[in-house]
Image (tube, rainbow, N blue to C red; front, side):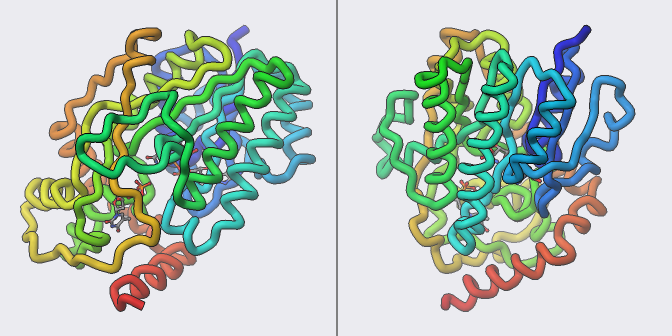
Length: 343
Ligand code: NAD
Ligand code: TYD
């Protein structure tokens, strides 16, 4: 019988890409558990919904009794926890839900996994737990860098990442943590920089660039992230943390201009707006450990993959319209206006 893995948050951006990746590259059975918040969309998985190795259950990791039922009805070889509130801007406006899902929800999953004696628990974390690098000369984060999160999102991810590691030390549970840099690719909700810029530029709308636009992010294609997660899940040393990254730093303003040039749109669309409070200046990740120990390397050329991502958004306008309508958009427009008006 094939081993069964519980993937939480599998209807979101990275989780759904990871499920596609697993079905293509492994013979695992998958149960996708997702609460389907504004960021979760089963359309992301329409191509695989009839695959015999794939199943879905709507469930909220904040509700322990519901999780209990899922663990009682299934025998999981492993758990990979992608489920999270994931947007820094939202965490500034509404931090409480980030603690409920990212911290308490992860604790529920850890406790259920411990009781069920799953063979391995992998917590998906982020480079944002390390805080920021202030200067261009500062060395990229390693796994030994200080944990020093700055936004409520990053603090909630740091708490869940450290909680997972504490289960290793305290209960001898088999835990791995991966910390990845900024992802891009298909199915990313258009609240994050790259899809937001693509969709607004396609509509010739103003493009909000926070502050002076000189903040730096380290971009990795989502399939390279999936590759690193699978390697860590299958071959990682129990109790280890692995950074995943592509050594691909870009200033926000340069990235926005690159997208505009690929779309053949004017740079006049760019509008510098009020900065994000607490905005981290620079992230950069050193992936040497996963490269040396597990043979990881990223395969995607940024320029080529960014072009493909743009094409994906052009060809999937109904998906984008679906994301950007309704209650979510009301929230977004309110937040956006607030920035444009510089309140
Ligand atoms: P996303 O917001 O696109 O997806 C999150 C998914 O989790 C959604 O499907 C949502 O419905 C689900 N979810 C939210 N709350 C839930 C709950 N209480 N119970 C069950 N499901 C719930 O996020 P993403 O960008 O795909 O990020 C996935 C994971 O990767 C997160 O843990 C995030 O912190 C981490 N990460 C993201 C990036 C990035 O660049 N996006 C980089 C590094 C790490
Ligand atoms: P984002 O995609 O929200 O990811 P994160 O904050 O988790 O790195 O933002 C990436 C960078 O782009 C970050 O420096 C903030 C900036 N940004 C803008 O300038 N304008 C925007 O509208 C958004 C969403 C982000």
